[in-house]
Length: 488
Image (cartoon, rainbow, N blue to C red; front, side, top):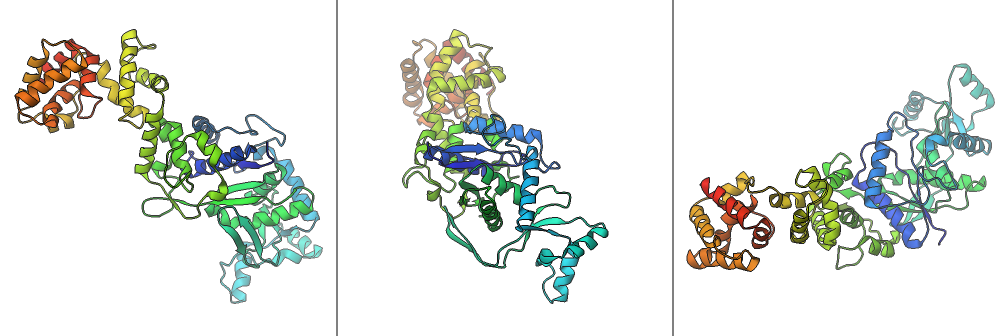
């Protein structure tokens, strides 16, 4: 067990999105690869935006993906509580220490006053805070209070470059004077993210901070806070930072949290396997090797290192996502896939609470066949549907239009005649249909078997035809062929 400690600290707002999960995955993966500890913390001090529903959705998503933590709001730990809304006394104590130590100060200036001072000096009025209140006397503070003003608390930024080594980007330097003194708490004493986030990281002894590239502008502020906490004896040493690359869409624009493809729970609802989703998300900025994209969770946890993450933007590629998820679908043991499919088959009304022996046999044979053609559980259910609906199958309108034309009636007549008296085996079905349609009618296989496939399965795409017909049985197969012929 190493001393490495990483964390994931989301705000419970909205639905879990791909970028959020990527941050969690990389932080979790680094801790597990190093044999360290992974901390799950909730930043819920914004009562207007935070919701318990979002928190529950977050737990649902992370649980589905199989990510676990060593400390958190649901399991406790040595640095509890792990909800910021329950740590307000901690922040009040830190604010007092920062004020007493001269690291922070009371600031009374309004935004309008700051802008007016910039204008008077010939500067851009939108430059931001001008550090005016740094050295107010006690008399000046008393005069402001007499006017009814309540101060905010600001952190003093040093007059020197702030430099840190980023695990992804190397040396990052912020020139002196480019970041003004910043607010750490409102006038009523309520703390802001600029205080609570680094304070909790310090007190929980986090030594690797994983965040999105978009948060880099706030990192110098965090470093200044860490240095003050170290001098106050509240932190041991500055952490290492890893700023992850942006996730962009096909236009190269930052992928919005509101982009439907970003909503993680939709993948669960669609029946993507979590191993496939995790695999793809891991490729958004990292690769296990130069010649393969598909790997198991165990392989990821053994190989991952934040120092190997690339800094250039990571493009969300839907085709690659589906290809990786389909590969994991094929890699899954058929028995396990059947277990995952059963609730969905029940929900679709295709089987009862427990499959009958006949239904179990159909699944034993059919699941290995359909998993070669699907990437989600929902797709598999739709592909299996025709095997559980008796003599009548709903024929897809588009499939019928594409297939039931020209000599489709003759094809079905010849198929019925050829199949009527044969031994009902895969080999027998294949031999009879080929003899009647390919040899007898001189048709190319695609044109020959298309009408038969649609009559049997209802669609142009299905599991292998001969195996499907054997599973359905002779009576059901012939009934479907005759029913389809009657429509032409």
